[in-house]
Image (cartoon, rainbow, N blue to C red; front, side):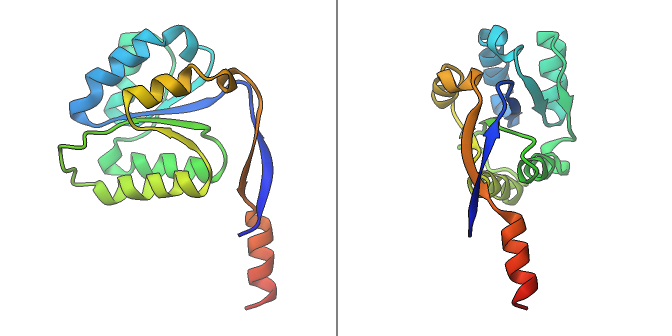
Length: 154
């Protein structure tokens, strides 16, 4: 796959996701990092988005609940370079009925070179990075090139 360079904006678009048993951890983490998070555009799936918006009093673009397709909505935004970072507190001890959706989301994040924090420690490292407040060049799949090759060589 050919890659191309694009630039992440200074104001990041951050997706916040948490499984049921991890929502309180995400609430605590976002509350601790609220002054930093306020500087960015926040997105969240279903219940998590409503909880965060109510508790933190910050605007959040709320998608539908993860099991109902919210994880896939986040994945679609990734392919359009409309999400720069994912903070996803998932519960490794609790099997989820929508595990295939979660795996698909993580796969799409890897394909599109999106930073993903799946634990409080990795989220702490990510939010404290100097890159969080800077434009940042990175590589993504060159879909136009891919499509052109496929159309010219059926």
